[in-house]
Length: 533
Image 1 (cartoon, helix red, strand yellow):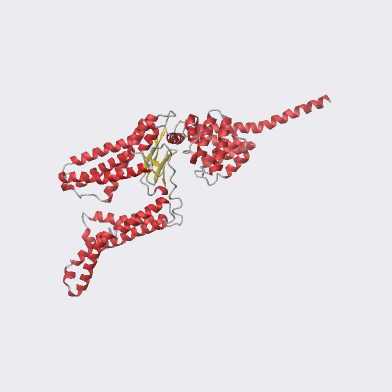
Image 2 (tube, rainbow, N blue to C red):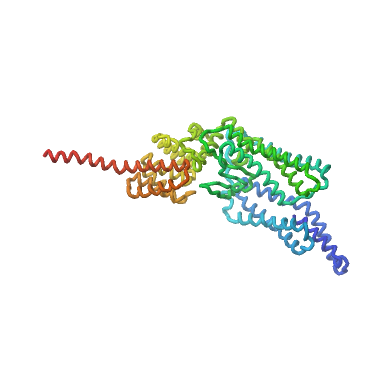
């Protein structure tokens, strides 16, 4: 971009009347003409090393190479350096670019700084790339994808954009030649891509609402928007910085598993892309000549990109840990364990915002996931889900066994657990397994855990106090927990926590009353002996 602007300004200086005729500037004129010729050659050569730099940066970061940070810093600095001469020349010769072209020049001036400076800031710390790339999980047998299918999808994507776009443009030159080349620059490209993604995800959302689902999350590249307790939060996932990923998270509002509805909700996204692509291309072909050319350009590219998104999503493939819509449809149709895996996670997320409760888990599906390689990374979490399900169904001993199995899985894998999972372990060991020692160990791990809230401390302290028979402390904490849950909006997790408090009260009563009854039973015979004497 820099070298394409330099000849423009050099030619302006060389065509200045004084510069062109002054004898004392003849040497300068020759030097500038040589520079202009050199830059013309450089225009053709510079994209090669720059492309190599950016591709190497992308590859090292995606592969988790230690050199990724160095390459990222070099690419960011190179981007900023490209922007400096552009900015200087724009200020120096602003009178040349004022008017209709000024907006485009300003956008081009700002882009290198908007991209390069955040890159320098992000990769300046020495540990910037430690958590940037997560290891790609192994492919699951029966997930419907393969490396060859991923490569085929990439070739199809390129073919649709390049060949499809070229065929459309050839047809357009015959009918709309007066509109060709009237593009809106980077801002229009961003608007086109955003429109395509929005329509695709809107198809998922609308179909989900028709099937009785609720929207609780949106993924847009590295940005993750999630709903929690009625509020939307945003999180930046650096390991997805180079991924072109988008998606929505919808949860079931009913415990009844509806495979047909789920397939319809998944397929609605590609169908929305297909229909919108055809509609946008039809609009582009019927736009009156009196309308601005930028409108034709927007409709054309939006239509082509929408058809590309349709084809790309309908093919079963996987990008990092994300499956395409086609792969998810295949998994649902074949009753894959992956379909069980996503259903259990989706249902678990629904417990905090709907009336669904742990007792409503599909226990057979949950156990299939626990016994498979798919569930191995989250075996501890799934084991705690099984324990909650059994406890709500009144199977206390089986629930305690599930806690012990989850403990064994944790010792094998040493997962990083959230505060909620730690609370489940504290309750399980203190109340169900009657093991206050292990419960105290888990309580000590609570500080510094992810998602820690004050009520988590109350919960763990109450469970431990009940198990150890500290009546006054336990009753005060249990009253706090009761009031906190009563003030919450009705949902499945609220009912579960109220049930857990009831179990803690029963444990406390047993812990306090049992010794008193035992003492009374021992004291009665001794009094009788004294009376007889």
